[in-house]
View 1: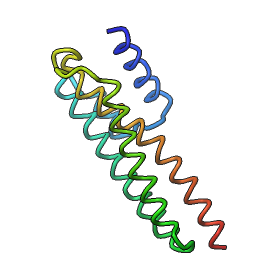
View 2: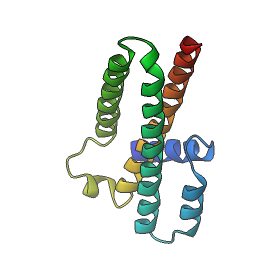
View 3: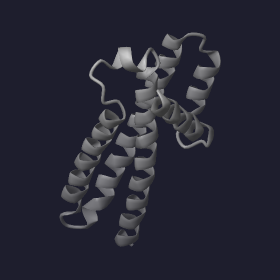
Amino acid sequence: MKSRLCLLLFVFATLQCGAQSSPQYDLCIKNAHTQAELNQCAISEALHVDAELNSVYQNLLLKAKVVQGAQEKIKAAEDAWRLYRDAYIAAMYPVKDKQTEYGSMYPMDVDLLRASLTSEHIKDLRELHKQYEEMAH
């Protein structure tokens, strides 16, 4: 329970710092009145961040065409990151019966953690994109 509280504090602190909170998410949680509504806000945020990741990733692959073999390495790195992300989330919530152990907030917690991890990864991909832009010039 203590680790769950720490995770929640981390996630909400991250959101308050603007690390991945979108205006749509902020509005959604402001208007949410039930846990189910909060869960829906979190999944919408995770989907929003995933869409941004996919866009940044595709743009990076296009930019990386200037260096032979770069796209394959970027794809391998992305595959490894996705495995890491999923394993990290599984490690944060290791109990088999998650709903019983973590409660009704579990779906929200996982989606917000996923969004937070993805937002940080987007920053890394943008830095990599800058590197390939410099190589192209």
